[in-house]
Each structure stands twice: as structure tokens, then as C-alpha cells.
Length: 312
Image (tube, rainbow, N blue to C red; front, top):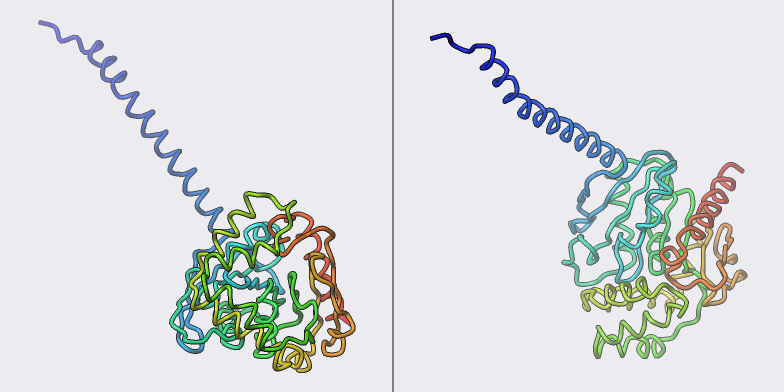
């Protein structure tokens, strides 16, 4: 009996086609995934951890390349996520670094006191780990006090400071009684007290989704960390350290502020090497989130102001 070789051959070829097509599709998908993965890695490195001066692990991330490095420091009871709307914009031309200061985000929380100086050491630890030679430090809210401490620790590396809705009046004459009254609701019931405290910093016009996220997120902060950091920050205004520190920092300072609180230009310029402010009308404390595009343009202007002063 004759074996139908031709028929068998055709049948075998047809049987192999689905396997070949499937394999090609699989390989194609893997290549696309690999290229996508590499593209993402080119934009954002994996999170890193470095020990601060006291051994507390500090989490940080790196995006993009280019000097000067822009190092973003978040505010009280916040973390690095509050800078999400700035990452892709500024990493096009700069190395952008974000970190979680101790007791916040993914960093360690073993300290008994959360001082501005210790937070400044967190910034220095990250700076030394990444090896940047020139930095502009950008700090939101309490981050303004932190970047001042960090600049004092790194006088040869930091070329300028940008405060974000902060440093309105470094001579503000706070007294202990006022601070005690401010902290009383936070000590009594942190979740409720912090929501009310932060709510006053957000305008009714702010995107309700952003407002609700901020209130929920910040009120979930560790109370012990938040209370200690608040006391340490505001105590600098009682002792006068909030102004004195700028007598030692001979670099330009620019702020990008909303218009919730007035700015005392004269008081700041009595202590700062130079001081300029960019004010966004009808913007609140979290302008980098709710008014991201407008804020990014203002921050670019602040950075260019510092670079121009450096050239001079």
C-alpha cells in the first residue's frame, strides 16, 4: 500500500503553523515588554535606601540626569508622593531626587525626636549617596526648614533653595503659648485634629479628589512622629533659630507660594543672601498638586533665578 507522503507533509506543515505563529507572537510580546521595561528604567530608577547619620534608613528615588540636581523634600506628615506631578517635567533636563524623611513614607521611624537638623542629615545622606556636586534643594512647607538645615550642612554643594509655600516670615514672633494652643487639638485626637488643621490650608476651589486624598493621607501619619516634628519645627520660631540659620547660608532663596498668607520680604531679606518670591494667585498650600502645570512653570522660573544669581 502506498504511503500518502504528500498528504502527510501538508498536514504536518499546517499543524506546525499555529505553533510557529504563537511562538513569534510570544517573542514579540517579550521584546515589547523588555523595551518598555528599559524605557521605564531610563526614566525612574528603583527605590534606594541609605542610612542617615544616626543609622535610620532613608528611602529615596532618582529620575533623569543633568546638573544641577533637584532634590525635593516633602512637608509635615507627607512623603515623596506629593511631588508626582513634577517628576516627568523636571527629569527631562535634571537629575531629580525625591526622598522620604525619617518617620515618613518608606523610611525608618526609630527616633525619639524628629528635629529639623536630623531631617537635614537625611538629606545629606541621600546627597552623598547619589554623588551630585551641585544641588538646588526644593522644600514644601516644613521642608523649607529642612532644606535650610541641609544647606548649612553642605555649603559646598547646595547652590540655592526653593521654598514651596513656606518661609513667608522667618522672623515670625511665635511664643510657647501659641504653639501649645496649636498643638492641643493634635494631641487630643490626632486624626480629627490634623484633618481640621490641614483643611484650613486647602481652598474650596481645590479639586475635591485631591483634597480628600490629602486629608485622609496626612491624618493617617504616625502621631508621635508628627507631634515631635511639629514641635521641633515651630520651636525654631520661638528661639529665633528660624532666622539665624539663614545668616550662615550665603546662597539665594526663592519661594513659590500661594496667597493664603502674606510674605514679609523685609524680614527675610535681613537674613538671607537674597530673597525673591513667586506668588500664584488663588492657590493654596498644595499648589504643586492642584495647580501642577502653572506651578511647574513657576518652579522653572525660580530655578532659573537661582542659576542666574550663581553665574553673577
